[in-house]
Length: 236
Ligand code: SF4
Image (cartoon, rainbow, N blue to C red; front, side, top):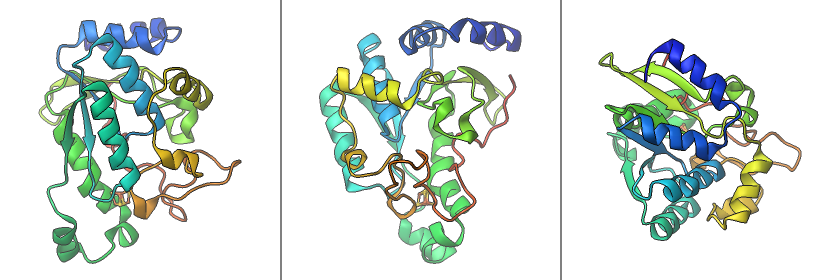
């Protein structure tokens, strides 16, 4: 189902649906699908609810080579707990090759290019050929995410259509944590150490209790998104 009008109608219907109901619809509608996760608390909750419905649901992640050791440990815990059907995509350049080509600490000199190499390009490879890409974005996470829809229509580079699905669009941070606690979902131990959103270690810091969720990402930069969720233009 890629017709823009049908997607608009379905979006209106799904506004009052639970994330599980949204996942059920997506699993029944789109044969080639995958969940993306960077192992934030939303991704962990999404994985838990998805494997309860479809134990072999494909999941992918991007290892930028700059992940915290705590994130890598969480990845292993999730794989073990859920026998996760997980594929890890990596950048085409190692950090050494990137430094040779673009200089040391590209994450400081040009973080957009660094994210492009280490996140966006691998993500594009990961979603190639999918009918549905499921992500853990929430509207209340950040201003940049406030207008997301549950179903969003995009085109792949070759012109074939896909939908991006945001089953947690209507959930708050509190809803997410309530689910994680209730279902004993593993989560990143850095979240107990003042981090609210976790990406690569060079670009992530802990935040104060009253700071925004994503205030610890790319601190001091005019940058709020890596580009994975903003590189494509919506068709509907
Ligand atoms: Fe590079 Fe930072 Fe982007 Fe990670 S978040 S890919 S280190 S700029």
